[in-house]
Image 1: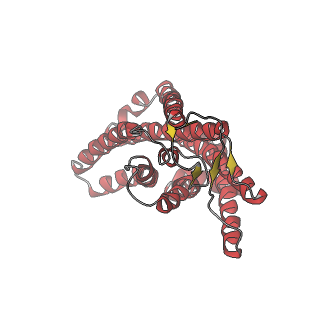
Image 2: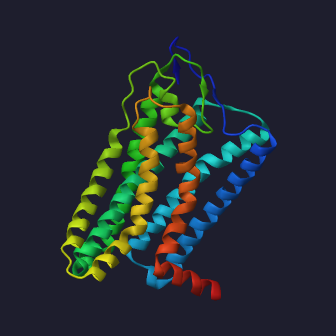
Image 3: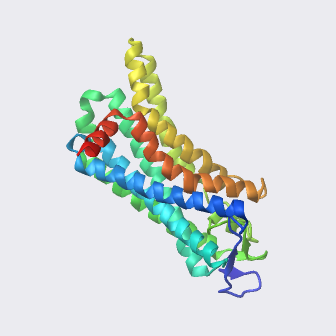
Length: 298
């Protein structure tokens, strides 16, 4: 971190999400419960996919990676937020802030590209079902997953480095409960346009679903079209939740909107979305529900 006057190493101040009133103490306890539920739900999803042979398919392997990313995402944010609240401290070092930004951008970028891979999986399953074992081979699935992590890591490294290299001419107070790149951009003196990478995976997802929609409209059977939409409804819900909130934060000009609104949206994509993803897939997917029922019966 570099200040406009050339000094370095001054800690940032996280203004946080809660104060120490009774209602905020209750909300803090609720967030901790959601954090634990998110960890347990995503861990259960990973265990089910690995234990049950009927879930050993590319779609579920990609889903297990999504669950792992969500576990890492909440673990990057919530423990530090809880420690600051319980210890009544708000400072975070530039190194700690940089690590948190890098991990968040890496996980966010990786999830963007993983959702793109999952949309391709839906496209192949609906538009080329007979060629699915070839077009979604285990090797390709591993390559797409590795590519998602690699591209996310590269993006995280580049954008975290760029964010922390800006000169900061405003207060060192970050109106957030964690170090988020757009919040630091609000403090920067320089011109900052760095988050358009979201358009690349989003455009690929939209292209996949355009082809899926065209294929469904060509189906003569209404039942077949309904089944096709049901196949990808869970993924569409997850894409909508993730991109709707993250684009609001990362692609809006920094002069627009309220920082308090940003904080609310950040709560949604960092706390609520990771706990909702396993619920969406378990409720909407017969194979996952069946595997969970058999696992509970044992």
